[in-house]
Length: 118
Image (cartoon, rainbow, N blue to C red):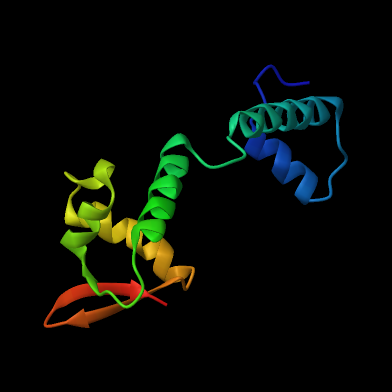
């Protein structure tokens, strides 16, 4: 038995090559499995705090929009008080959610994005 510590790569190569699995290989792979499970358990299983906040803002924008009115990006910020100081990039990103859900239609008029309810 060697005194050198076996790496995960060597252990996986041993298994993939079809060689006999020694106790050392089995221990190394079990340790790898435990570390992967531990790492995966730390990952969040839902939307982040920012994603939840953005979803709320998207709903507020949708509720504030009126039928048969065409809005430019800057005008969207005036619909919801929390977005009064928001950048056009932020507003455009929020509006993409409504466009992809097909609740709002986006059009380009003279190079400017406009939005209206679908």
